Amino acid sequence: MIQVRDLTKTYGPTLSIDSLSFEVGEGDVLGFLGPNGAGKSTTMRILTGLARPTAGSARVGGFDVQGENEKVRQLIGYCPERAPVYDEMTLAGFLEFMGGIRGLSSREAKREMERTTDLVNLQNERRRLLRNLSKGTRQRAAIAQSLLGDPKVLILDEPTAGLDPSQINDVRELIRSMAGRRTVILSTHILPEVEMTCSRVVIIAGGRIVAKGTPESLIGEEKREIIVAVRGERAPLEKILQPLGSCDIRRVGETWQGALRPKSKTDPRAEIAREVVGAGLELIELRAASARLEDVFLRAIGKRPS
Amino acid sequence: MSNFPRTVWLVARREFSALLTNPLFFVLSGVFFLLAAWIFVVTLYQFAQGAEGMTVNVTASVVRPTFFVVHFFLLVQVPLLTMRGFAEDRSSGVLDLLQTTPMTDWALLLGKFFGTVAAMLIYLLLTLLFPLVTSFLGTVDWAVIVGSAIALLLSSAAYVAFGLFCSSLTESQVIAAVISYVGLFLLVLTDIVIEDLPQAWLRDMVRHFSVNEHLTAILDGLLAPMDVMYFVGLTAIFLFLTARWLEAARWRA
Image (cartoon, rainbow over all chains, first blue to last red; front, side, top):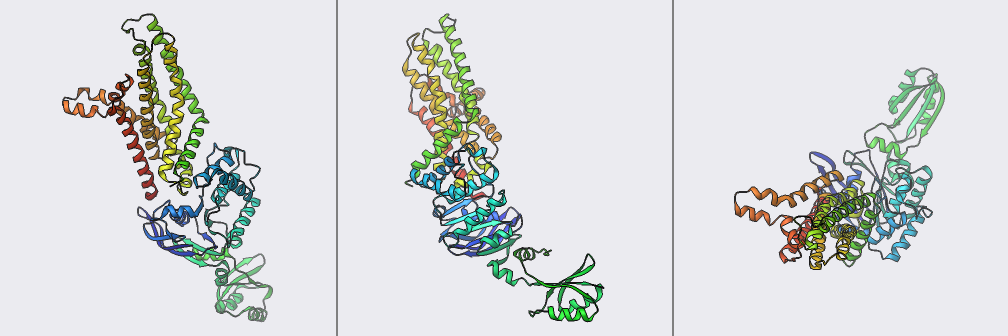
């Protein structure tokens, strides 16, 4: 549904995104991850036709986002990062207005207003002025706006920013419910959100893709860590762990705790247990820590997971 | 394309409602209408007293000068009403939202234009009370009144188009208003500035671009095609420039 090829964008001398290439299949929910300034919003703006790439191309639904932008706009629903709305309008008035300019008849626009406000749980706020609503409610109004007319492709830039935990959960459920039926690109900083809602992940840093795949495959590729905690001296523990892989050892209370990233694929825990006991150390803890998407993300953007 | 008239209508209706729910609109229209009414009453009183220099023609002595004042107030009001147009939408991010819908930039622009002109029409319709009141006191030349109304409508449309163009250039409403004021006053004051130009051909050429040159004839009830074309042309040029600018802004981003 979406094909991005060598997409590059510069602002003057500053490189915002650099040769991005990825694809999003029909019905996929793609999580677009990256630190602030990584180029997520720029990529999304190019996909919607709001910005022009310096090089490369992007197609949505088979249409070029530059040359066939009008056709692309028929397919997409877009929720920008700032959740803009017309403050002086009521929620219903705003959504019916946006539905109308999306090409819906008055009756369809009203029906869509009712459907989308139901989806984001704003059915009781329809007659209220948007200026009188909280930030979270306005954010949900902007999400509702992107759902008008049930577009085939949804581009959501930080859709859960400013929402409380319950509202975040509702929006995640909503996005998850669209999987398989609608193609969704979702940018966010909240990693559990991606693990919970996305079928695919693209991580960008410094304008370049540093990792992509399904959340499961990315977590699977992340090497598991073995955590060993002993009471005794540091040196023998270091001597045991260093030949097995890279390790960090630090003092935690009365124990020395080592985090080992093993070189080999075989589980070294039995060997570690034997050697620790053999070296006269007191074994307090020995476990395999499961990797999280956060670890994948931090390592991909060049930071060390904690 | 078939949705074009409907989207223009929807945007115009929203723009009109937004202006009408904006206190600034009521304050401006109210204040300027009251000022115009005060000037009208004073002029009418002087006319009734047979003030020196006034002709016996009540239309020329009372209504026409009042409409000149009304026109001057238009120049002050329009930039304050059009400054929101695109600048506010751009700074709030709503413009991004609108430009990712299937609506064309032209539909958005024409909607804003017609919505703002419709709001200005309320103020202009109120000023028609002046000739109406005058008609009870003397014989009014309705041809001149119709000419004046057309002149005010055409000039309003041109100023709104120019104001929207200025508003499309920036995110700041204040900057948009300042640019509009400078531009409009240049257009109006051109013929005063060129009085001292030594070259007659240059004076004649520049005079064609002056609002006053074309406005005075229509205010007198003389609807010359050239004068009408001047305002229609001015409107069309600035609408076209705004549409081009909106498109260019999309690709400069």
